[in-house]
Length: 292
Image (cartoon, rainbow, N blue to C red):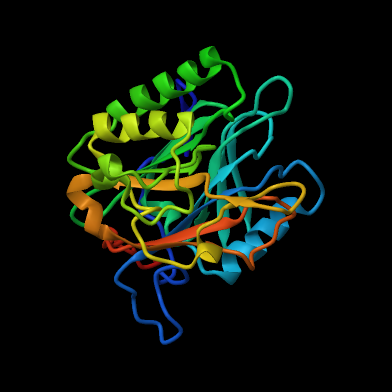
């Protein structure tokens, strides 16, 4: 594993001795599941004692293979192994804010070809698939009350990063976009009709523009669910819940994402709920070498 320029972490192909792939891609009988469980979670901070261990415990509890993380708040960039998970993390800013990354099951780590931290709000992860490679783009957008300049900078960087990903691979954009999407028919083809909200916010319009320009659709608001499984952030006063975390995928592979919903039972001392989904895709098989 070596560091390369532009904040990217590239994993070199090597012949390695590994146990049979297990965990996030298998059930209790040891048979491989036809998909990859993934998620996104604004954890608020991992810069406190026991926070990372608590995070891994909850991810293991729900058996997720790849989880996009926001507000890690760690300095520098690198990897951290905890039990059967590896955390790929990017650096926070000078005020120890933000920082994005991914928590990945150990069976998937050998399939990771690159982790790149674009800035404290954006990072990407590339994984080898059997037929199509997969790129996860993790984003943490400014809130509605931030300046137009700050919002413009984020969405320009988001679009630039998205455009760098080849369109012939599965592109999944997920994270905390501080975005409310409504139910207007004009946006139905991009966001569906099953949002928690009736009116689209300004950030929501920006996200829809990114989706339309990038050939993406929002899967978070495509599934008919009870409202309790839609809300992703609870207000400090506890009086209302908003759906501000989202999952998008390129239209060509829209049927690959199944069952996106909020997991209210997961707890890592955050006011955001874990959002999980299922990606119907086959990962590349590893070639195991026998010890000599």
